[in-house]
Length: 195
Image (cartoon, rainbow, N blue to C red; front, side, top):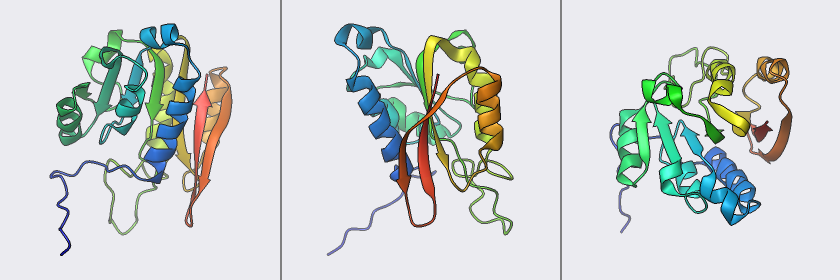
């Protein structure tokens, strides 16, 4: 007999190929650090969803140094129930974030273009009219929340235009490196390391 899996209500973005790819990059990056470095690192899980990136980081970084943010109150409650500091915020809009700086910021942004038919235009999957708008605002603002040697891990999709994102990174004088990619039948996912 098959058990029916009931979705969390209201829904929280469930980990999929994009989340797992970003999680693996974070794990690989943190594995390269020594114990003393890891004890001091601060980590921001932007758009936390289920909390998979926070959980990955917590294998290496003290939980007190991990902060999770999501626009979805249900996601914030879920991640708090896992013992993480979390707050509801539209990107960096929450006042608590304004005085904070992070060594690592991970973001799997909503990146799908708006559906002209109006189906699936949800804030956890749709990144604006073209799909790049949320990621672009994030890049424009996130520089204010990075430590001097801080790094961003940003997931992007071939379904999203990336010209403006790359231009913003270049304008800030930062380096962009594609550190992971995965080809799916309908898109190619990449994780960008920005520092």
